[in-house]
Amino acid sequence: MKLDNLIYDNNGKKVYRDGDASIKLFDESFKTADVLNEALNTARIEETGLNIPRIREVTKIDGKWAIVTDFIEGETLASLMEKHPEKEDEYLELFVKTQIEIQNKSCPLLNKIHDKMNRKISESDLDATTRYELHTRLNGMKKHRKVCHGDYNPSNIIITADGTPYILDWSHATQGNASEDVARTYLLFWLDKKYTLADKYIRLFCKMSDTALQYVQSWMPIVAASQLVKGNPEERELLETWIHVVDYE
Image 1 (tube, rainbow, N blue to C red):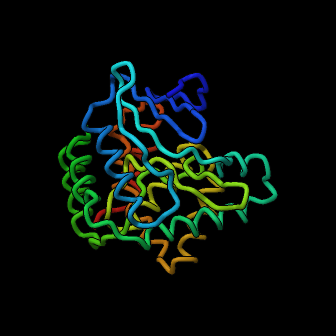
Image 2: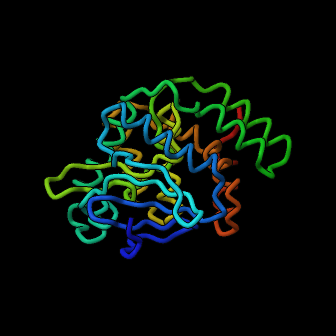
């Protein structure tokens, strides 16, 4: 494998292209369990039939873990939306349609989103009263078994020359309530300061999936609390606003 064509470098992960293969190389900060969990998630999602890069190999290169997959030739949806703002509505519809397709799949061996969110709330530095309220809110949500991507944003969608969308990065995949995943995508748009796009996205998703807007919004305190655990000081003020945005019942 050749590591001379770097195409991505961020947060301790480097992605190289080697012919028709993509090599994701993790630095020493990544735990073995996390790398293998990402590979396992990807392998399980393959079985759903979704368009994703197929795993070829999990290996070590110079003592660092690497996941080797098919290389998908194309352009990210984020790049296309930036280059062609006049097509924003068209691209956003494709984005939502693809997310609904993901959520229509089931993958019984994935970790459960309720378990993950309960753990994240417990790990946060929020006060005990707020943590209790968040746990109570979460445990009152309906428990579904839909595939949830966990980091669904336009940068993780590759559009090929024939217009086929491929979904990347399944490291955060879980199964559970689809509205949590929608609330997270909405929050990611906000954190990226794309407020108008966030509003268009959530309203389009609710229309296309026949989901109540209020129900998706009720997940916002939970996903904001889970994002808070990442410890990004630049995000904290906004996240705390979302955590307290809805009065608890």
